[in-house]
Amino acid sequence: MSANSFFVNLDQIFVLLRNWLVGFLPSALRPAAGVLLGVIAIVCVFPGLFALTTVFERKGLGRMQNRLGPNRVGPYGLFQPVADGIKSLTKEDIVPLSANAAVHFLAPLALVVTVFMGFAVLPMGRNMVLVDMDAGLLFFFAMGAATELSVFMAGWSSRNKYSLLGAMRAVAQMISYEVVLLLSSVAVVMITGSLSLPKIVAAQDQYSGIFPHWYIFTPWGLAGFVMYAIAATAETNRSPFDLPEGESELVAGYHTEYSGFKFALFFLGEYLAMFSISGLGTTLFLGGWSAPLSFLQFIPSWIWFFGKVMTSIFVFIWVRGTLPRLRQDQLMNFAWKFVLPYTLLNLMVTALWRFMGEGWQRWVVCTIILAGAYIVMGRLGMRGEHFGRRSYRHAE
Amino acid sequence: MSPIFYLLAAITLAGGLAAVLLKHLVHCALAVTVAFAGLALLFLELDAQFAGFAQILVYIGAVAILIVFAILLTRGADLPKAGVFSKTWFLGLLIAAAVFAVLGWAVLASVSAIPQQTAIPSVTVHDIGVALVGRYVLPLEIVALLLTAATIGAVIVAMHEKARPRG
Image 1 (cartoon, rainbow over the protein chains, first blue to last red):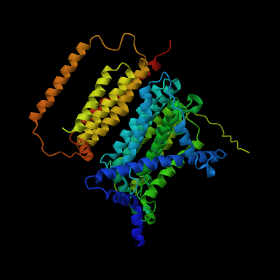
Image 2: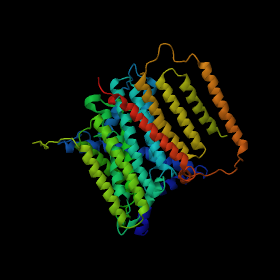
Image 3: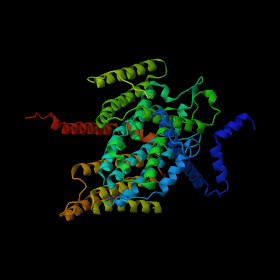
Image 4: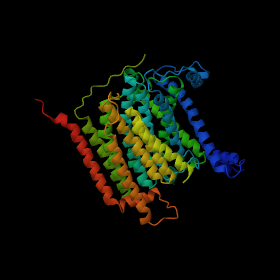
C-alpha cells in the first residue's frame, strides 16, 4: 500500500467502516442500516465530546482564575465527567408540586432531540454527512428555532418566578440574535448559490497557491463571521450573554426546578448546541473539513473538522473567562442597534462583491465600506458614554 | 395514500382538536405547535423540503413563540372562573364549516381545472428562488412593503406612551 492510498483510506476510514459493516446485511436493508449507523455514531461521539469538554472547560476556567479546577477523580481530575454522570443518574428526580407535570417532563426531551437533529446536515469530513439535503441550512435553522419553544416550556411549566423570568429572557435573546445568525449565513448562501452544506464546503475547498478559499479570508466573510460568532454566543446562552441563567439574580434560570438526569439533559443540550453551532460556523466560514494550507491536505478531513470545532469551543471558554455579563438593555441595544444593521450592510456588501467580478478593486471597495461603517457606527453608539481609566488588580 | 400520511394527518388533527378543547391557554398554544409540526411533516412527506422547513422555522420558531408571549404578557396564565368556552360556539362552528366548505370546493374544483400530472415534479430550492425574484417579484415586493409598514406601525404603537408630554 503506497503512502498516498494509505492517507486516502485514513481520510475515508469511517465511510469504509460503515460500508463494511453494512455489507453483512441483505441489500434491501443496507440504506436503512447505513443511516442507523450514522445516527449511532452522532449520538455516541458528541455526548463523548461533551464529557471531555466539561472537564476541559473547568480546568481551563480554573487556569484563567488562578486555581486548579477539578483534581480529585482520576489523574488530573480527568474522570470528573464519569463521577458527574453517575451522580446525576442516581439523584432523586424532583418535580415541584405545582408544576405542570407533562410539560415539565417533555421540555428537556424536546430540547435534546431538536439539538441532535441539527447534526444530521453537518458535513463532518469528506463524504461524511448523514443527510445531504438540498435545503440543509434551512433545516439546521428550523431545528434551532424549535429549541426556543422547549426553553419556554421548561421555564413556564416549573411554576417558579425565576424559571419564568429566565425563560422569557432566554426566548427574547434567542429571537433577537437568531435574526443575525440567519442573515450572516445568508451572505454565504449568496456567494455559494446553494443552501446545501456539502456544496458550501466544496466551494471553499480550493486553493490559490497554498492558501485556501475560505470565506473568512474575504472582507464580507470576516465581518459575517464576527457577527455570526456574536450571535452564536448569544444563541447558546454563553457568557457574556448568559443572562437567562445569571446565577447571581435568577438561581439558574429556566432549569432551576430540574434535578437529576433531567438537569443533565439540559446541560447536555446546551453543550450540544455549542458543538452544532460551532460546526455550522466552521462549515460556513472556516472551510468545513478542508485543510488550512494546501500541503496539509493529507491529514484526514475529519481531524480538521473536529479540530476547528474544538478550537471554537476553546474560544467560547476563553471569552467566558474574560468578559463580564451584559445587562438586559445593553444586550438588546447591542443586537438591534449595532449587530443587526451591520449584518444588513454586510449583505449589501456581499452582493457588491458578487457583482464586481474578479480583481483587486472589490477587495478595496468592500473593505473600505465595512471598516468605515464599523468605525462610524461604533463612534455613534459610544457617543455620550464616559469611561474612566481602567484599573487592574492582580492576584498576588 | 400511504400509512405515513394517515399517521401525520391524525397527529395534525389531534393537535388542532387539542388546541380547541384544552382548558389551559398555554397548553392550547403547545397543541397548536403540534399541529404546525404535523403540517410541516406532511409537506416533507410530499417531498416539498423548502415548504416544510419554512413551516417549522416560521410557525414553530416565530408564530408559536409569539402566541405564548402574547398569552403571558396579557392575561397571565390563570384560568377564568366563567369557563373558557364561548357562549356563541354554535356561530363559530357555522363560520368554520363555511370556511371549510369554500376551501374544499376550491381544492376539488382545481382538480378538474388543472390537468393531472403523472410525473412527480421535482422543485429545488433554486427553482423557488428563481420563481420568487422572477415571475412573482411583484407580489414579493408588495408583501415586503406591507411587512415594513406593519413594523413601522408596531414601533409607533409602542412609542406612543413615551412621546406623550407629561402634564
